[in-house]
Amino acid sequence: MFEMFAHSWKDIWLVLLSVVHLALFFVVAFFFDALSWPWLVALGGLLVFLYCTNYQCVAHNFLHNPFFKWEWLNNAFSVMNSMVLGMPQTLYKYHHLNHHQFNNDVPEPPAMTQDRSSTFRHARTPGREETFCCTRCSAHFARTCTPCT
Image (cartoon, rainbow, N blue to C red; front, side):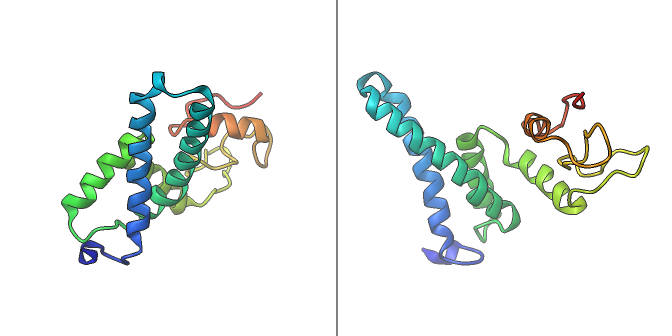
């Protein structure tokens, strides 16, 4: 069973975390009316934790080092994790690799940064964006928000 993993058998824990995340999502959806509000709050908190962990650990590791030896299995996992996160893994991959390629570059006037997620990209003055603006704008991968004014 562990021969299917390309790098380490320990990747099974990341795969299982994503599967549990998907399963719990469906459990809450199907049994929503039957669950009491304390259970819904607890399961909602667990889903938020799993979402953050999946995004920061599972999806991040998967895009740098696909888990499986076989491309079809990597594609299947990518589709499943895209459904769990509500975001295509392909979009995340290109956005994140753009960030690594240009590494939060500082713009050279009058040009824009090449890193689409650079904290310098929409600053009003030379330097980093203000925290609120950076947080608001970073929610959009395409960075379509207007610069903070």
